[in-house]
Image 1 (cartoon, rainbow, N blue to C red):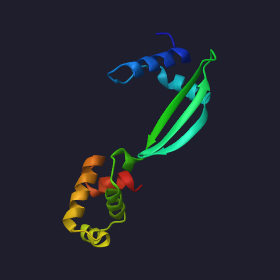
Image 2: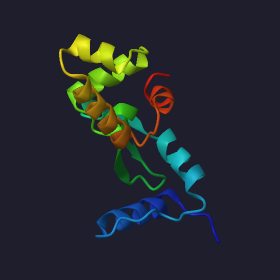
Image 3: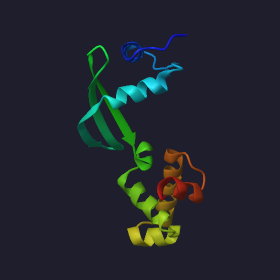
Image 4: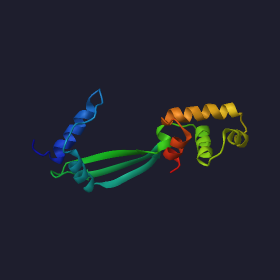
Length: 138
């Protein structure tokens, strides 16, 4: 299989974006091409989004075709869509506080905190406090 040019890679990426069903691209030589693509880019905009940061890059390919790429970097907590209350509870868990301590500090019942902890675990796809701390607090 011949190596693809940046223009061919961009065309393939455009075609995959325009399909109704999103599927991962199977491009075996994509990594070095993407590296070359990003080397030719300059940052145009950086903006905060609910779950992270969006970075827009622009560049020109070998055949002087202009392109734009937007990368969205998600914060681990934002990826799960935690509410403000859940974020506060998660912070207390990272500090090693018990459910009773968190309930007292937040002025809610221990059952409310227990429910929020269950939602945090579900949204972040973790099954223990240790896993939560590893995911959010390190």
